[in-house]
Length: 86
Image 1 (cartoon, rainbow, N blue to C red):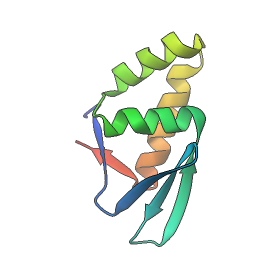
Image 2: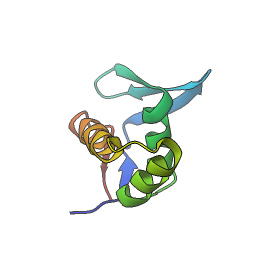
Image 3: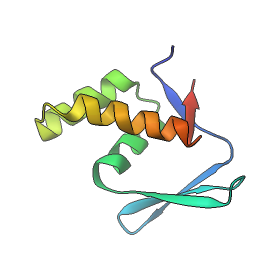
C-alpha cells in the first residue's frame, strides 16, 4: 500500500478566499477544505507522503491527535474518490 496520493482526474480544486473548493465533475458535487484539511490537501498536491504530512503538522500544532486526524481525513478523501494512491 502506497503512502503517497494524487488528486483524481475527475476532481477540480480551486482556492476561494481561504479555502479549497473541491468539485467532482463526474458526480457533480463539491466539498470544501479549510484550515488543517486544506493544509493536508495542499501537501498531497505537492506529492508529500503521509509520513511527511503527519510530521509537518505535528511540528505546527504539537497535538497528539494529528496522526489519527490525518489518517481519518485521507481515508475520507479516498472514500469520496477525491484522491487515489499513487
